[in-house]
Image 1: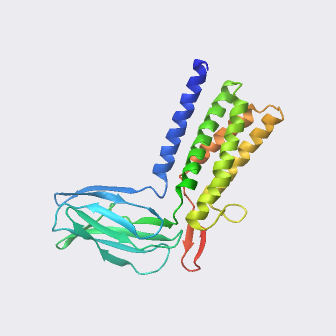
Image 2: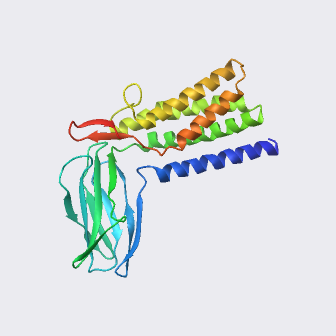
Image 3: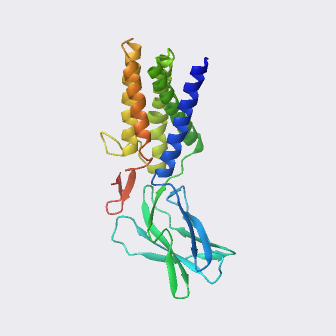
Length: 272
């Protein structure tokens, strides 16, 4: 491989890693960090926004002052249910509590209030947090899905850059990107979703789940590019377009407008 070829690989890898980090940190399930000084005491921890598998969702915060205590206050998300308070238990410098287990795609809205005498502060600058529950996804299904989707993103970026440079590898990379995307997104993606939320597919034509529809859009884009390569047509611009589509899709935070349990009907729908 020529030095210019190595440069394409490195640039594609940097774009892929940057996009993956951005998507994770901007997604609605990324934990909210807490770090504040209140009455001379440093309070820290993470307000988690997702929980998989059986059991309640654990919550832990660091509050070194034993004169302080905290309460988790929660309710079912998007309902008129009353707020419920649950006092956290102290063990050394840490306070422990949990949110009650919910059915797959069920969401709870919660906040943590720290008290000292008659004073109190609500963590996360007074804003509540929404967490979503899901079923346990076996590692044998989840790990290949993640790796294949990461590889598909990398191959897509590499193919797009190769097409811009008119590198002869763009045809092979197009086939690989399409194949990895198909297996990782269209086969393993629904399997992972079935374990997590009980449904294989909630995108078009059966629903408007954004994650499913993003996968479908990128699959169509790359299938067209692969077809144009196969027909030996002028595929260069199709490859570039498919790579741009996938990159734009990855700029949308993962799990945005995902599955959500409607507590009134107890049916899973697409979140707003």
